[in-house]
Image (cartoon, rainbow, N blue to C red):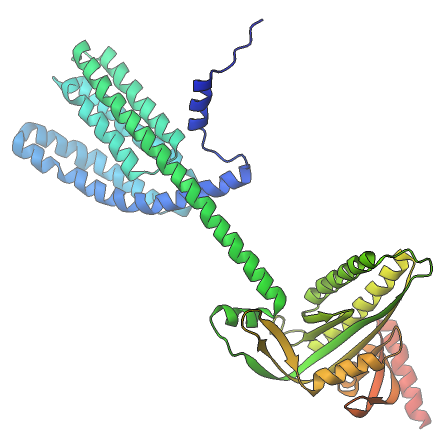
Length: 444
């Protein structure tokens, strides 16, 4: 049994014909892009072409009144309404995905009609070549369809003309040879034109897509460095950004030590582990509308209330939920590795100044006494605990278990009332808390 192997020239021709991307999703995206660009051209040219085609009966009428009268009827009653209707269809969004199929059908109708007219004219096929070439040119100029549709239209026109010649009474073999020669030339040029047009469109599509992807990556990087509303101001060209914010919630979470009894963790493992931890913190920060500001060694600083991402939630409550999530993540991480993780967390509510520093390497940062208080609360907290300030306590006392630590000395701040944040109240715990608080009040 002999296996047929395509020749080198046939393989090249098939490769020339097939311009599709191997990725089907990418191909679908390109088709949508291509059709949207083609529609804008087609809608305008269809309107111009409809009126231009209809008005040519005037010249026909001047040269040959009987023929001009017939053309006026054909174009005015049939062709012009069809062209206007097709133009209207292209303005209907639901038909956009069928653009190339509609164009193909739209071309087939006048092609078949032309074959019928030329077959019934006395000297129809002496002038038919020009008619078919004009149709083919109109199809290529007005409708920027892909190569495979252009080839189908061209082959259909060629086949229709040959069959019409065979079955028409007014056709001669001499005119068939002449018509084929000219029409094949038109087909060749239209196919090459369609190939170049589609190839350039695919290159342009990939270039624009790469630019959009690059811009999206740059935006993601910028949004990761600073709050979205600040990043948008930077993108708009604003350079001096320093905002005074009346009230935000600042949190510092610090991994103060990792005790590895079995000495199994290398330094590189610890760095990877820290990256995993901070990545998990980032996920929880996004969940609770908390903005990461920076990381310093094992310390993670974040603030809630910088941007109005969710105006319906309380930024202090969001931060407390985030702190509990961070505590749970660190305990789970240490347990999974068989190590002991020492950490402290500090939270404070107060005013700050937030802005951009730097020119070449932009950095978003926050300043003010509120930042210092949150940092000092973290450094004063006992291992595994979350210390909060008095202003934070008043914002959370109805929703979380909180116990007083008493006054503690904060470096650079002085004596400050501190509280230990516990778990969030569930319904049963909250009722028990209220009863206990009520009994304590009666006793006093």
